[in-house]
Length: 82
Ligand SMILES: [Zn+2]
Image (tube, rainbow, N blue to C red):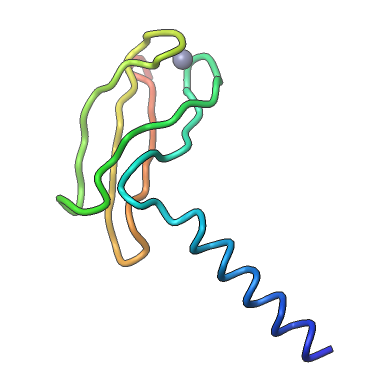
């Protein structure tokens, strides 16, 4: 059904816009303990950024890698001991 498709598309877009980070917290999962956490990130800034931040749950150091493109910031966490 064409009408249903259109509705789904709008819903999908709204949902997508809703989760678009507005410069505050990005949901992440700790690579050590697997606990969900949030990471404060700036929506604009360098195209690629790396720093270390401690997990608020287990206090082990995350290697935080942020890349920014047209879609907004993307966050990647890796362990320090890999
Ligand atoms: Zn942790």
